[in-house]
Length: 124
Image (tube, rainbow, N blue to C red):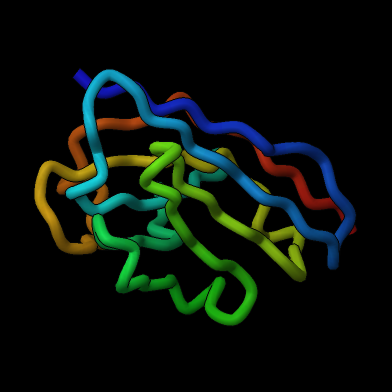
């Protein structure tokens, strides 16, 4: 029903910046909450940031507060994750996901649709 495609991941030096994009197609997603998650090899999947359908409210994991910014452009059906001051511990596959409800959730099991992920590698 919904397809999500992430892009923008690459190798960067510590202290650098990246902007990830998540393009949605197949149906409207503007009314539902969206989230970014990440997973490193051997680690559990971790909530990074979430945003409500309107873009009016955002929530961040403590590990990225002050460094990452989530936003959305509903006219383009796209969600972004601006990542600044990157650290080696930010290295992971980053996934975007869409709920079928309206508020933000930090729980991956409350998201219905997932992208394939984009690799972010931060070198020291």
